[in-house]
Image: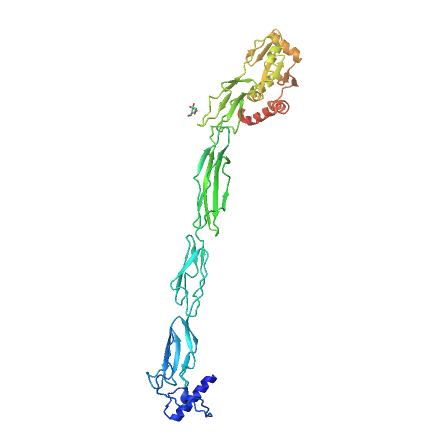
Length: 459
Ligand SMILES: *[C@@H]1O[C@H](CO)[C@@H](O)[C@H](O)[C@H]1NC(C)=O
């Protein structure tokens, strides 16, 4: 400020001396302080010299001068010039200078181009600018394929040398794609209830990730044994930006089945595998006292039908035309139980009652594999019979002796399947008592199970 002060002082002084300066409403005219005269300049000051100072020029800028003498006197002594720079340039130095008595301008200035900093590169993206880092240059950002721009798409270099907006980012919002193999149905093999099922892994793609490794399977592994039914296999995949894709398909395992076979009357079945699946074999068995007529084994075929036709269980043929008790009993060995009933005569009250009970219990006794033998009366009119088939008198005598059965009173003997007498009765007994005795003491475990299944058979 001291230089300017000196300059102002000087001009004021000069104008007073020459009486030519009128003032123009600016600071100059209001300056009326009395100061001592201290001029160091030569007295040949020429206010009319249009070239008192050199012509001011400012590259990339503008000089606006005001001379009290008019437009042609831009470099006259005392001329004041405002300096400004073009758009995009910054002024360094004085914004205002004046032509001084020493024929110099009171200061200098220059215009320097304003530049923004070089924008940093961004991940998975690029930008291009219209005029580099110059003011007004516009930079447009783009992202690589599969990435989306987030933030400011363009940035402009502003007057102040800063970029507009903020740096954008390129994010992967594009989910990967995953394609599962087609759903499939597999038949379980013969005698199996499972099937081995394989498939190719799903096809995964992503626009940005070359290889996707984060593929997870929910469900059974390919190549393993699948149970009968429907299995949903799900796959999902994440790309590096945690975008997810998923797919699923169905593995259905079918077990071909034949109709469930029914046990034959007086017989039962033992089946392999799952009883009626493809390849299962069922073997027919007849209960004691019955014989199988027909095939022993049937196999379930792929077309859901069984091989052969069902056999039947027919009553065991008992040969009553034998000469000894042993020959008769042998035929029942391990096959039937015997209930031998003896009465002195047909009119015996116990016998009559017992006979009535046994008639009604026929089916229940048959279920328990019991054959009834009757020994009636005394020789010479003694009768022995199994249902309506008569026994020889030698056989009757043999049975009485072997089992010590008296002719003089009513009695019953229960023999097990080995011919051992297990129970004797001298009074009539109800069918319930008989059944419960047999069921608890005489039946084998498997017989008891079968009896349980056929419980209602006789109703
Ligand atoms: C099932 O297949 C067998 C031979 O594979 C054939 O003999 C039988 O007739 C077929 N049964 C039916 C019901 O198609």
